[in-house]
Length: 444
Image 1 (tube, rainbow, N blue to C red):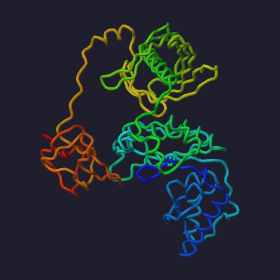
Image 2 (cartoon, one colour):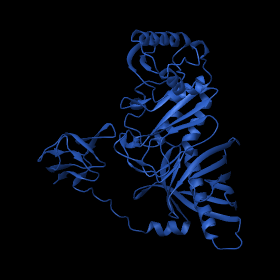
Image 3 (cartoon, helix red, strand yellow):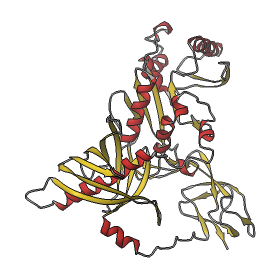
Image 4 (cartoon, rainbow, N blue to C red):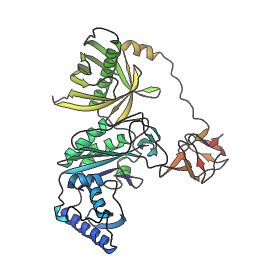
């Protein structure tokens, strides 16, 4: 799976390639290396059509970004073998020793916003926690507090999962993405999580055009089923109850464990607009970092168990499905406000309002503020180099039209007009470096 001709999701082995084709491709790659007397780790890229006909693209005289998943299914440390070759030593393995064991998946976690055409994001990681678990590997070079700058590729980490089969590998990837905490900038976990749960991807119907075909209007946010929407509402209500219980008990010698039946009005918010509120009634017992609730939504009652050290990001929830089976899910909590906060679910971040009936009644009478109009200027979202200017003073532009192209983080990014308008002045020149928040274009 790729965007901008750069891969974001990889698997090993391929669902398309059979042993015969794999052997033929390997022989061709080895013959090419021998022809130029190449001795080291190298990667030969080929493109394959549905008939398993393969064609040479290029050779990179190095390891590829996705080498961890090859290591995971073969048990061979490719970096070690590369160093041995450089030192003039024999490789510690022979071709006949290489066997495929299980399945591995790699997600490239990027500092970019997939909801805005993969626009790069810069900033400091205010909270960064890598996932752990069986079959999980994270290759990264950053720590909590690291700065993601404009001067390098926006890759944060390579998140890899191994399993004895493809289904297990994908399940572990889904869980790892849900547990991956990245705060302080935009990232593409929401897209990665959505792709690997799409039925088309699960079926293995994968091409290099996958993203534009599945998301023709661009990726926006994970689409929830009605049942998932209810579970989000229930969890949001429980988070408020647990926070109030925890912080309300500060400096008290005895902390009441019970939670009397409480009703909340929960809805997703989109700026000043709200979806239709859902009434959630909960009652339960809270003890430290865990809680057990009985939650009722639309006359349907379910049991919910929550593991959450209040104040930490990751929330683990078990609910009972309609068929009586346990559903295990991971949420993440964002924010400090008592009634309005954000919850990450299915990889995407949702803004929620959680109000008591009395608060909801008062909220209904509060005046709605009008949306702020955009400034009549376009500012640079990050440092970079101007590589193209598509307008001049006096030009009329429509909302969404490309105004200027900025090169940053090894990518070219089109900056588009937010509203209709007329260009008053262009404040920059092509091939000039601009700073973050610098004025680029003024509109009348």
